[in-house]
Length: 408
Ligand code: B12
Ligand code: SF4
Ligand code: SF4
Image (tube, rainbow, N blue to C red; front, side, top):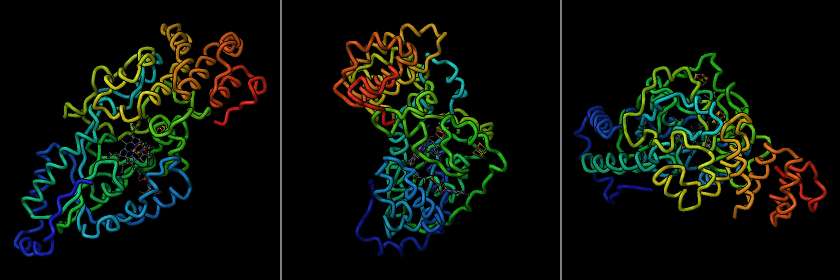
């Protein structure tokens, strides 16, 4: 947790009284803009209001799935002062990562991989953190204050704080929507002991629209403004290990890392602009890679292709597991289908059990039970129960392979 703290915090208060808080705020806003943050707002720790309780209900309902790290510091998330009692103001910033084209277009090309927009450029954690740290260092020097900066990974409820700071509102898909940038804003937070004038919170502008709720391929919204992460493809492809649960595999289509559907359909995107920061724009190699090529990646190849991107965080095995499911979803009339079948046959012998398990399912999508019987002679005795369960399902037989049944 980066911080610039000196022991003499109280003695500095006097040196601040000769400064007008509004002028300080304006200076910080100008500096944030110079660092490339397109959105800026200030709020107070107490402005979280009901969001802390809603967050606790989300946890109580188990909607965080296996993201135990979300529950681990729930008190800190629900109340910023529990994390840092000295915090008086929270500066929220946003960086535009608007795509060059509609992300939904990629879903029509089943032989290509759909990598979510946020992961096609440099890792935003690194890009934003660097800028926020520079802003923090400048603030600490200029205003003699203490502060801490966060991007994504700390125990901070970034979306409700950004809404309280007036940057946008939490849409029915739960993400922050901006009138200027639509769905495409990364968020960062800076806690400080400076006393800054807060902005007004943003009004909800969803109205009667329900597009994001209706487009979700896995029906992950139990109600507007609420997400069950366990059903969200972003969670399933990025956060969850082991096999993808059976009921979500076809719905995954060719989405192999995250999902943008609910973001992409938002009508407020009509005001969105393409990211101006080159680091946040899509790398050519990640825009529409072929699934059959991604299926051949070994660990070194994976690390080279996804160097300095968010994708590298999930590791080669989880990534190729996702690719295997997408290969199973490739359309029957695709010119790449024979290559997909060949790739899946190779993945049946992969060293990672979840990859083998998903390769069995995916190959069965193309060959059917009869086709799988020929493959089974050699491979259906896999040492891993999760893989044997897939073979049993693929062959339409839950008894002949040592009683293994699918738990997904
Ligand atoms: C955990 C997490 C996930 C999880 C859970 C997502 C979620 N919606 O919570 C998973 C892995 C699924 C995920 C997916 C994505 N994520 Co994410 N994720 C986070 C993380 C680390 C924590 C979010 C959190 O606290 N969730 C817990 C829930 C309970 O919080 P919540 O959504 O705010 O819940 C509120 C609502 O339920 C609301 N509520 C409940 N009832 C009601 C009723 C009414 C009337 C109202 C108004 C509100 C309301 O109150 C709750 C508390 O505020 C943040 C970074 C951070 N530290 O904040 C990034 C973050 C939210 N993710 C981000 C992104 C970009 C994504 C994806 C778009 C990535 C992708 N393309 O695949 C998807 C979007 C999926 C979606 N529809 O949300 C960005 C969002 C930026 C933005 N503009 O909002 C963040 C802020 C990271 C960042 N620093 O930029 N993510
Ligand atoms: S990211 Fe995709 S799967 Fe997740 S809630 Fe949005 S549309 Fe549904
Ligand atoms: S798609 Fe509609 S309901 Fe969903 S966030 Fe955008 S405006 Fe709100």
